[in-house]
Image (cartoon, rainbow, N blue to C red; front, top):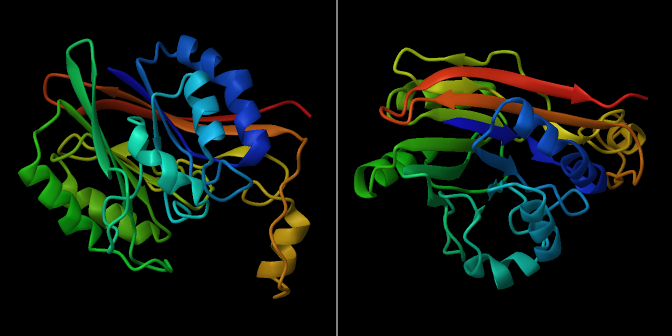
Length: 261
């Protein structure tokens, strides 16, 4: 089973990149199932319903979220009516939607789970490891299990992957918007990467205009991050080849596609 996982889609340019290029990579790598992190899709924070539907129409099969899951009130109104949108599993307080959903494709079941990290993150969450273990022990086992671990610290991401090695098919990091080069398959057959990266404006910072990010992070100004409406796009993703009979990953490799200037 070939699975494409796309890193955080950011704003209008990110959505355009998906529309313009997703099918090319699906065809090139004979992809069976597409997952994308969509927590930054709408103006950089959150996911409005019409943007969710746009991504589904463009060929994405499942969309995960992250720390900006509740940035748009619209999500609470429509998430329970969808079957392709996964919010964080380990939220402390009740929230609509599901943190893990199982899909079936040609007789193969694929579980997609979204989990928030607890290190250097503002959100108060239940322990991500124990939340996943409870899910694994108490819910019906799927043939393939992909975990989107939306977290800041690479150490937390790697430790969770080692703790879950052999229990899930992949632990894929999102949130930092910077693709890492530590993709690998652990001893028990679990694929890992610290961060898949982001899909959006290539010539800024984190998908936003670099000036606004620099002003806030470096100079401490109380400015908001701005998103350009036009510019060169970047698509960051990983391709997973998973044995559907034992759930172990046979291959993982990254995609880092930059449009021409």
